[in-house]
Length: 455
Image (cartoon, rainbow, N blue to C red; front, side, top):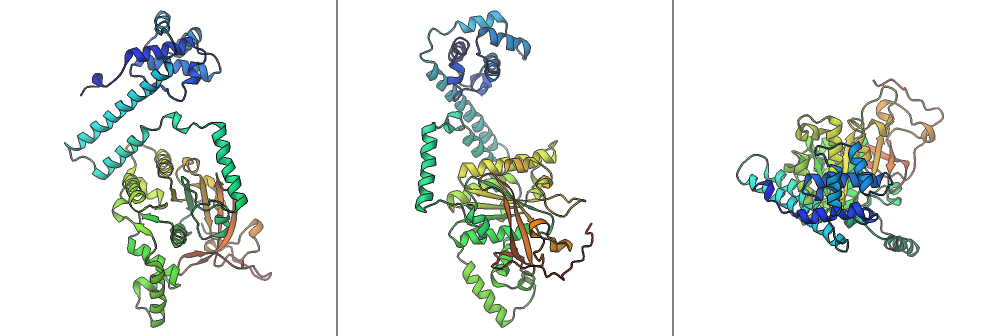
């Protein structure tokens, strides 16, 4: 099917543009329905962009202003003043303006559906591309067909009513919080919020995977279904870490050594507590970000998954980076897609990321997210892990009197919904387990740490 056969209505487009040029309020009144994309013909796209340009400058987009804008912003197709005047005279009345705008939006949606259908039909005549990837991309495109601006518009009354429900819930104690992490400081701020993209970042060997697994287990123990995707480890290796965290036996011992009678008892008890937790793995999906997104959609639909953990971002580069795409562009694109997925499904997505090393300090900083500042822009929350013990360092600032041995600092470097802050938790190296501390260990006055330069 050729493009010229796609559904459209030239008369409707002409009348809508005519009203936009002659009615001072038309542009603002139609902003929830129109964009340049809804117009099929290039000349009307160009004129609408000019109307929008004038409107964004704070001026009334009348015939004179739009003509001046077109003269100062040349387009591929030249629209002469007399042509603009002829189009402006096309509409007899503006009574049907809103209905015509809705019609153009609907026709545009139908054209987009046709394009998606063509891609799907092409996949039936060729073996190029993985079916899971094709299906995932098609689902994403179909979801976007419903992303017209009007779907997000609410009145002040609606917004205040929603706020009032929150205030009343706070008064009654029936506060709806996010998914618990098992760390009181975070959970008091609401935990992992649905629709959020949470980035957990640290330098190499600081425990990103371990912290994510501990949060995953803690959420599952409280009845929240979770999915865990690792691009480095098999599900049995992740299970070994979970068992180590729960039993107190090192992961290496569980995987490589005969267990003693006492260790077997601890191991069996740990498995009993872990066995029925609603945690799901999908090893076949970790080839690319498209496969992971497709799997998360399936998990959300079939398993009612509320939070998905992905370990970790930088490995995806070799699998999903497009030709000619920079590292920054790729990481930013992945982060935004995962954020959109979280919003679409109403779940929390936790993405692990490396931090670039610094010659000046071992302490993690937000601007050291490896590969892209766009990661932090897309994220709602960024958690940074710091274990100074790894570098034979001490904590600084407010934590300078805390013993770094067996502890870690978790910093909320960005918190769109939960604010900022940091806390100290425990870390058991043999079992790679982060846990809540009942007592914060303090340094003795005579204690000294040999602060050798680690780089």
